[in-house]
Image 1 (cartoon, rainbow, N blue to C red):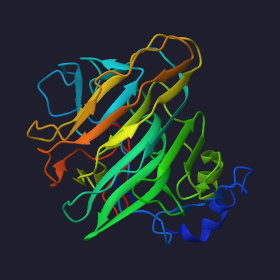
Image 2: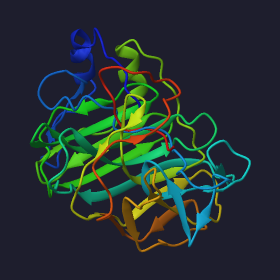
Image 3: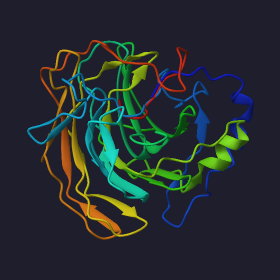
Image 4: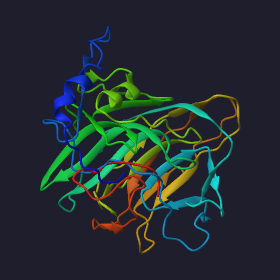
Length: 325
């Protein structure tokens, strides 16, 4: 994600809240969405996600070494993509059209890190190929000065993120879903709340934004180093984070094997490890894959890493997650 200044949104916050469901039979409380800088639980001054960035590796950019694809900002698995020496970011679609993606995970505990350092965990559709438009839902863990903060978010990149106005704590059991063309939901079973299925096309329209349908060529389960302005943020240290089992769906049956992605810094040092390195193969429209764990590498330093500006982003007050770079 890249930084975007958000202005004149607070007056429209009640329109976002109107999209929230009533308390359901499950007994979970209905959680509302708020724009960034919208008060309590309104998120950090970053964009939690940004399109996929290839890692600083030798030409071609799509260098897959020892079964790993290297990225500057995404760690985890990408379904529907394969290394390509001709694409701008080193990845190309395999011909799949993804309709939905979901996963569950426990919110990681932040470890001692540099002030104002960040980590985002999410599921998403798009952000890698084609338009790189990205539909996603997840959580952000960050340090606001010396204090650790945790918040849930949803986003239609390149629009700015929206944050869930409900508490999130380390260890909370999270479930998140993104479904084309514009549906997301986040549930925190530990804290007892859910957004329910939210139509982001309607929500962003109520805030004066144009909705950008996700590029459906890929589906992802990602830990991300977010983007601050035109640079990657200082990457927070966090406890090992396990996703899954994880699922996705395609419009037609296609054989696919999710691609492992490892975050490396500008010096080529791994910032995370992913285990196992393969989560299986699916051949039907419903793909179910094994759980995996993302661990912060001990060699990963907390300092910012250089990164290019987002395609719709410029320096501003608010950043967040976004397409892979």
